[in-house]
Image 1 (cartoon, rainbow over the protein chains, first blue to last red):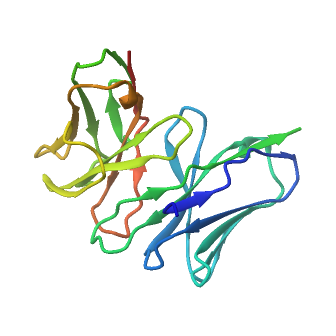
Image 2: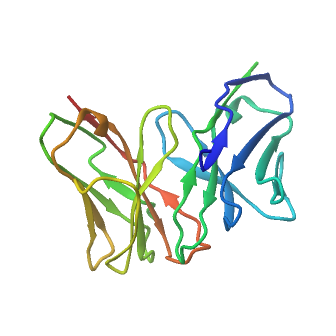
Length: 112
Length: 113
């Protein structure tokens, strides 16, 4: 089983739609969880951290289910500018420092 | 404040050559990490340095090496380049704590012919 697995997509949605991505991780002792966004040929940028209690930032909601070892990202009212690849990211256990394990990413295409 | 900077932006090399990539972290950040992103994949961790010491190493061959300088900038060196080394090489900087957010630079796109 891969450390972090995501559906590569692409997810094609119209503007205004709600779309959800899931991600699973293999190591149950993983410490920290994130969603990064990566535009074509650009560097990844932190979208949001994922907390056990769930967290929301505007149109974006992230959830963590430790028992099932999955992380989700919900985007409401999709905008054209949301088109990007969304990377699920886990900070593995055992390290006293921050190294990140990335999924392959899920591509989102929002159309007019 | 300037973000993470990397140089060069693009690089073309041939098999067997070596390459040196450079990274300057955000001012005040003491930790630098290197990642390799092959087309269609997520970034893969190569190294992390903190206060000039190697803190972590990913599953990469010994052809890959790195170092960090007293001003916290860093170099990634790759020897005996292979076609499969063609990738986007990303540098990320943090304050050094496990909970710190990693901020990525724009990357160096390496093409090996």
